[in-house]
Image (tube, rainbow, N blue to C red):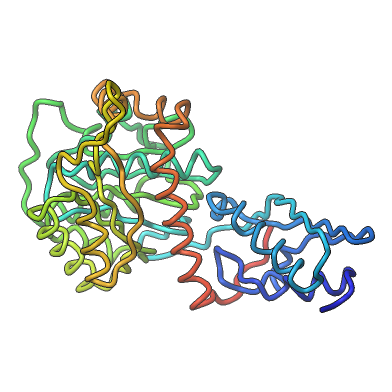
Length: 358
């Protein structure tokens, strides 16, 4: 137990790992300012936009550390922006901090809706996010977001993505007519994925969310060779037939050395607006049980939401996710869990010091 002072406050929090890099905050210049007035401590803490989804959690943890070190003290953490550039990575040379794959072992489980919603939720928290639709044969992201048009080619011969607000989006759906099928063999698929990654003007992002095609094809292998993958999210529904295919997706990611951030149980119960009762149309809890069995984190469940379903069909998913906090809440919980799991990985294996922050 120590008397509250600037020194004791700094000593209590300086070793706390930065959620983005895992490095001690005292060494990364993120403890911007500490002031003490009697029993009250005020801390200005710098966090990058990569950590925006869990900024309040980090602040609460540091406040509790100060109180534990000086019982009877009051601590308030104010989070301020901490700018950190994204180093270029992979063969594609992307300036993206974390690439996250969203996949499933089968179609029809809402994978694309989850991928788009995850991207929108992270953006709503304040992160810089891009969305890439790698489901070349069945691209649905343009429909979900109400996007159309053909990407322009810049003077530097690079692809200018279509934008959903500030979010860059790239999909094969922008390059073919809606009623036309893409009939390609593996090499052409490999080439298109690399082109989407390496020749698109993504800019500098915290996250690139990639909507994977269903099944266990070679897209995951192509991506794993092109760019470092921060992790994957596996989407399934509660019934056993979907879980069997989700197991295959997990096995695929493990074989190509892509970390698994967790499982999402989609269509997890339906709350009837007429009587307030919840009906487990597809069952409930199957993904959580299977995640525990496979030693995979369970990120959360997403209930059947008729409003979101209609919004996706009408191309208004981004609008509803931005304006309806109740509809967005289950996905916000999952987005926080994803960022939290990335922070745990970073703390376990801190990044090496790189270029100074700007």
